[in-house]
Length: 333
Image 1 (cartoon, rainbow, N blue to C red):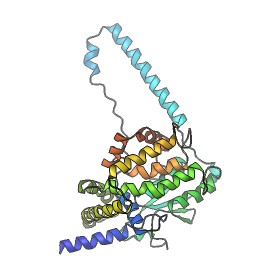
Image 2 (cartoon, helix red, strand yellow):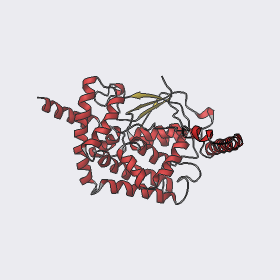
Image 3 (cartoon, helix red, strand yellow):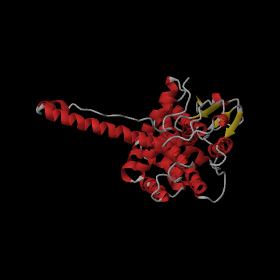
Image 4 (spheres, one colour):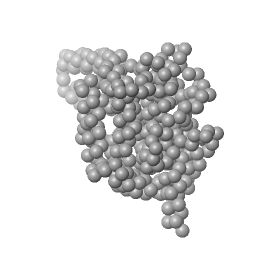
């Protein structure tokens, strides 16, 4: 009976979680988008400055040496502050003119959905305050008011916008008319399409490539979603099992023989596209940079994301993007 219940729940989860974004035409793509919905938090900012080694060493020096060392440390600290200030100047956010900033922005999302994170990267970078409503992926009760049953949904001053790329184009067109290219053959558009049509297809087979990584992913969604205790346990194990098998089907569908190799290749493809620039946009991120960053952000501190940074050259660009996007513009309630 428990097995039958778990299988039934897995089926329900697969159908329910297949409602992410609106950019693709096939159900497997929906399940792929959900794959990232079970990924890990990206807020692993840490500061580890320790000096326990220094005190015993100081005791062995003369007072003159101690003063010299103190001056040297002070100089290093000043240099560090100057470098940090310079970094902030180089990688500052780009808020639009105050008169163009919407008054009320609400994002209906799954916390780790890649397309939701793509929208959040845009909102965060342009410092547009927004509220978040976490949608229960099983009941979807939070979006029953909408005819659109997928996420993300962004409500901007009462207007409903759907589909991540469309959301960014429409909102960007209102507040940043000179920065958003909704269509065309330009470099920025090409790589934004690459994110939706290629990069996302590689991620699910990577984060669900074995049972331990699948459970790692669902640990996050069950701790952040709107679940009862019973739902949390069921979703974690039944969902992980369901997505493990879905990822295997996706490997076949997209002819992926080695999921890690495909992920590394995609990361290197992106770095090659930068062609030595800090960002695809040059000295500052453009919409393609924000799209790649948003999609990768949910997996960055999963095993797959750690492997990607360790085995490819994408880490430096990703760190620059973290500094550029900066703190979330989300309104805490």
